[in-house]
Each structure stands twice: as C-alpha cells, then as structure tokens.
Image (cartoon, rainbow, N blue to C red):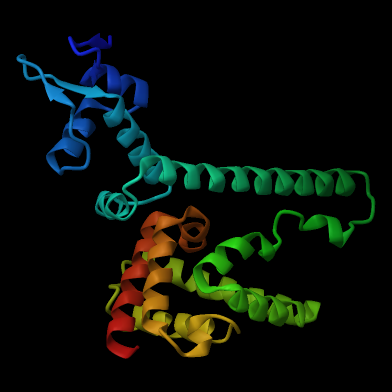
Length: 260
C-alpha cells in the first residue's frame, strides 16, 4: 500500500509499483541500477519506494518500451525530452492519430468482408481508407519542411495506378529482403546487409522532396531515419519488428559512415 510521509508526500513500495505497472520488482531494480528510474527513497529495510514523479517516469519508460525502444535509446529520449508533460502529450497525440487510422482501416476491411460475402462489387475507393500516405503530412512537414512534403506529394499523385503499384512492390521487396537478411543472422557490416543499405539509400534518393534526393545533409537524414525505424513501431513493422529495425539501423549507420 502507499505510504504518506511526514511531509505529506505519498510513495509506494516496489512490490506495489510492480503490481500496478504489470512488471516485476527485478525489472524496477534493474532500471535503478542503470540510472533510468531511481526510487524516491530507500527504507531502512532496504525496500525501494516510488513517489508520483517516479511513477510518471515509469509510465514514460513503459510507453517507450511498447514502441520498441531499448533501454539505452530510452535514456537518450529522456535526455532530449526533459519535460515529461510535453513528451507524454506528443505520445498521446500520436496514439490518438493511430486510433483514428486503425478505426478507419478496420471499417474498410469490415466493408470489404461484407461485400465479398454478399457477392457484391468491390469499390476501390472504399478499400484503402486509413492507408492514405497523407496521414504523415504533419510529421513530414515538421521534420523536413512544407516544400519537402509538397514535392513528394506531387510526385506520388502524378503517378498512375500501375506506377504506384510497381513502386509499392519494390518497397515491399526491399522490406522483405531486409527481414530475410536479419532473420538469417547476417552481420550488419557484411556484404549482404551493406548491399541492402545501398539499395535503401538509392530508394530514398528516388523520392522527390527528401533530403536524400536534394543531396544536402543526406548522411544525417539517413541515420535519422534509421533511428526512427527503431523508435516508431509504424516503421519497425516494415522490418519485422524492433529487432529487425535495429538490424536495419545498424547497417544503414555503417553504410552512411563509409559512403555518405
């Protein structure tokens, strides 16, 4: 149970915190050992206690773990985003966007199933709601500017259906090759992974509006994207999850260091 100290501050023993958070006391002690989550105090019996600020820190850790970030990456995030309210607000905004997008996808798939069962005619314009690339507009504009989004959007909309399908197939092939290489245990600095990294950079350079296509700051752009693949589950899913994304990131970083 929570305890109230003489100064009116509430804190909770480690076992209670572990139970509430769905984790283990051992995990919390490990977070303490590596400096990621310090208890607010340690009792005379050696028990760790956590106050509200510590619980807030733990919530952020668990949210970032769900995004696939490793503990070193989480420590880096904390260094960059010291204000927990701002960080959680951004996370909440992203969760809301994902919730809306997934709801649209679910409805789209539900309609497709019902149409197929009824023997009706599929309506292409209704089948891909929630899959629109423009969902990333604000994110792209924030990271690389409105001109970057406008150029890439114009390029995409200028392609006909066959060209879009060909481009998507090439992207899926690249993602599949990354997944296969990672699953095979290929080293990130080996010839297979480095050839994939070369193909990946060439693909990025083929998209108008990106720093890779513009030729300026391409090394920082590639390594930044590599970090995003690990940090954001939307991208990590393209490479088989967090472990696959980490493999891609390592290979791209090595390639960027040698060739960009």
